[in-house]
Length: 128
Image (cartoon, rainbow, N blue to C red; front, side, top):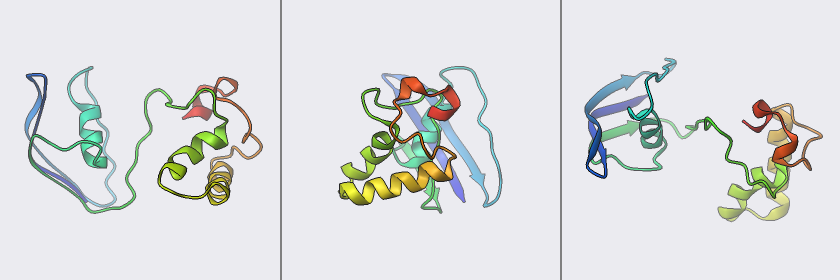
C-alpha cells in the first residue's frame, strides 16, 4: 500500500502540488499522467524516499519500490555490468559478489552476453 496524506511540495517558491491525498492498495496499477512540471517525477521520488515532502505524510508498505527513468542514467564509460554493479559497490558489496548479482539480473532481463557492452552500443529499450 502507498498512501499520501495532505502532502505538499514546492521548489524555489513554485508550488508543485498542495494537499495531495491518495491511497494505492496492494495489487492496484496506477499511471501518472500530466504535462511537464505538474509533479509526476516528484511524486515518484517521494514514494521511493529519494526526497521528503515539505508537509504531510507518506506511507509505503513495501520494501520493493523502484521506477525506470524516462531517459537512461547509465554511466557512458562503464560497461553494462559495471553500471549495474555501481550502486551495489557504493553500498559496500564486494566486487566479486556485486558482479555475480549483476550477471543474475542481466540474465533475468534477457541481457546475458551483453555484460561488456557500453551504453552507446545498446538500443533505448535495452538501456532502460
